[in-house]
Image (tube, rainbow, N blue to C red):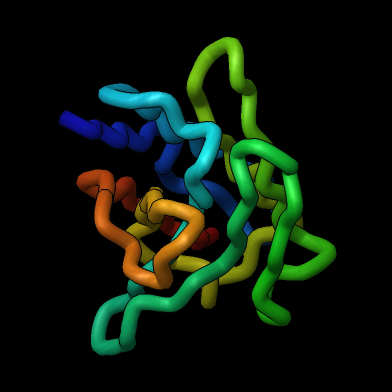
Length: 119
């Protein structure tokens, strides 16, 4: 059974940084793409960044490019999202997700972690 467990959310001031972690378990993820998403109140869930576990290829949404960095530690089976220069509009619930590389369906989701950017 695949499990994704996020951690690292919290309250941070504008301009600050946070690092989210997603601990993955239940299978070998070599042929999976891992992603970070967020959903703010009243808005649709949006993809922020993705990484191919095997090759490390990354994708970033324009809204977070140059501020957020996705990475993975294969030894720890953990995916990270380093978030810098945070803005109030980054406030949302952040989710980790996984999909098999041959599909477009994100089949596995974490429970989410709240990030609040406020002074």
